[in-house]
Image (cartoon, rainbow, N blue to C red; front, side, top):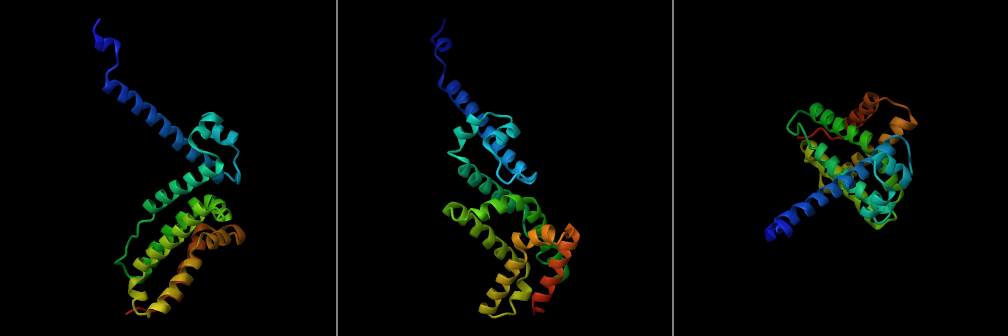
Length: 208
């Protein structure tokens, strides 16, 4: 029997390590997605046991990958931010005013609808520095997108007034605003979007 048959090669060891790493990453992602799914179903504080059942793994597997449930929440926030940014690409930026407003509102509304359960959690825990930083990041990304979508109208304003309008639009199209329209006032998706479209149109200047 050759020495190679007895002693695994470095390439074989590397493949085993890579395989274990991929399995571990798949389990990590399954845990994050299980946590998010439980939030969407209305469970505001899923337990480790519930998350493990949903992810089809053990509770031990959760704490092998996350230091605690706060660590899982932070990972879920990062996952959601990455997904949300990929899904919220600015579209129709060169369209006419109604087209741009409709495009922005539709994209923003669907992001709020999808990620609102997680947003409630991370916003309520914004005393945690890492989560607070994520909250600020998401809010600033909304403003950045609106600068692009509404450039023709905003360019007619002086810098201080432009910032005021953007801050007001950010409040209008926030997760908190969407939560009120949908779950306090009971509006449908289309009706809530209609409120946003109308308000944005009224708030924006006529442009050049």
